Length: 300
Ligand code: 13P
Ligand code: SF4
View 1 (cartoon, protein in one colour):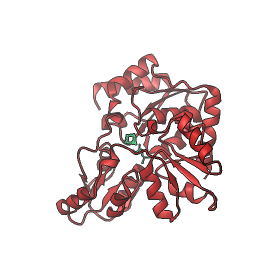
View 2: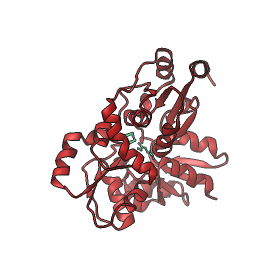
View 3: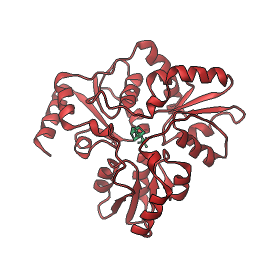
View 4: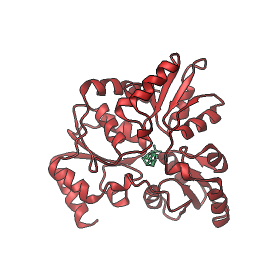
């Protein structure tokens, strides 16, 4: 533990702040958090938080989700400009236009979407529950899935159900290719290759499993294998290594880095704690409308 981390822990305790962190933020930030998880685990946790102030070490849509689920609490983002580029690939005007073009469809939005888009859709999902959410919807209705076209295609393939896709993707996971998997299989023979469901369908088909970050942690913990190739953002390696002594991890490509997740540093966490800066502000009415699809997801 370094000096900055000690200072953060002391201030956090003095001020009664609860710190949530996503699996992709840098390891030294994960280490000062009260809870580290994937998007689904963090949404569940955010809904339960009792503290008056939550500091969310993640990108904007995650902080917004925490605020929507707990509108009376103060949610601080240490790096308010850390945003998910995919979440910006769907805006409320485009969703409204799509609703008019598909009046009978159920609109499912990946949690990686803005609060004002959530306010326009029917149900949310995360990579950890997307297939379950879609499977629970009536089979005779059209489903428009946004904004991640790759996740949508992966679910559709898995369920054998046709969906209407949105032209969005995660710029990091969309870069993963089948050639990268083939190269990794030569480099680390026999090791399971795990990728994220935000990767293209041909990539998820070539891997051993396509899992949320929480799903990858579970897979590795339960697997008798000793070596694994990890095809997701580099931040996940921190927990994989720490929680699995004796197991070895190889990145599919070291360049799988989400620049926005890396904007969260010990320095800006400390500054947000000291000054209570970076508060997520959302109108009450928007929170109310955006909460409904998230609660529907959590109920499912
Ligand atoms: P997880 O829910 O799997 O942690 O994914 C979040 C994310 O942003 C993936 O790029
Ligand atoms: Fe968004 Fe991709 Fe970064 Fe996740 S890894 S926050 S989906 S850009």
